[in-house]
Length: 410
Image (tube, rainbow, N blue to C red; front, side, top):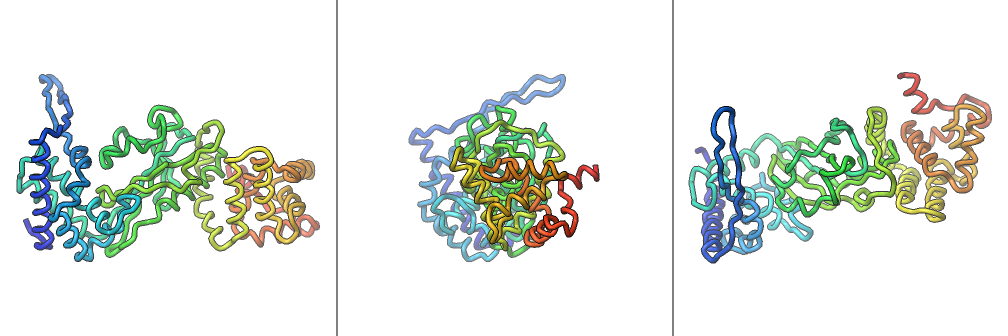
């Protein structure tokens, strides 16, 4: 075996050996090592049965005491001196994790678990450790990293289809046991009935390649929150992601982070199906949400609309009015926003008159949603307002709407 970092190899081997000894002592004191009873069957042959020790949850349950060992501290210090390990020091290993905790949780624990699984328990085998260490070095010193994050997604059905939202973000069906395989604590962090109800079978996933030398992971909570907003705008479905997301780096556990509250809280309403049209709309909307970063009024309109999903009665109406005024009112206020919104959404004089009534006073939530969608799809909000004003004065035709354009294209 060719070792690229001999000093690191020795310190990590010492940590693994010391941890094996400490865990064996725990077993000698009466600690229980759980086992799984597995059946291996094949065609035209008798079934074979195997007791497999569940070393991952056992190690996880003793992680706190292993972390306090001197050999763990020395191994972490050696990792901190290695520039290639910098991104692992940013792992989100806990609510108060520092670099030491991050390196322990994202490097040392997975290395220990991989070695113990290869050993079939805690009887030391040099070859098993070397295989696990080679995998670690390939992750540390390879060409870039593969980052991934997954969060439960509830409130919609997809019929099992994988839906690409762009920039490495997708919706797909959750595989049985995929979260618990890398994160033993995952089952206690999932939404109620996840995996058992039709609208609770999917995950939101982010996958991205990171360049060599990258020291910071993507902002998965922020990107997931934008994806949830885009899907809510496209479907009006009561969707939510989380409450936590699970991160991996090079297919090793990297951390568990909370999803932003606005995205992890489920609005009231009936689940909806994400069909191909609305999935395409969500994918179109997602990159356009970045426009809000440079447009405070658009940001205000989106925030107010999303907050209205969790309110009712006069509180909801007030949020919707403020959303519409910020979106299309400018210096002219709510009355002008209602007129502009009616021109934007309506395709006939009669439809525009009806829409103006639905936007004025106590605006309807779904009409505000459609107004936000059309505004985002036009891109330049200031130019859109100017165009709408010219249309009101009869100087030009109203701008073509997104839905109308899609219908003609279809």
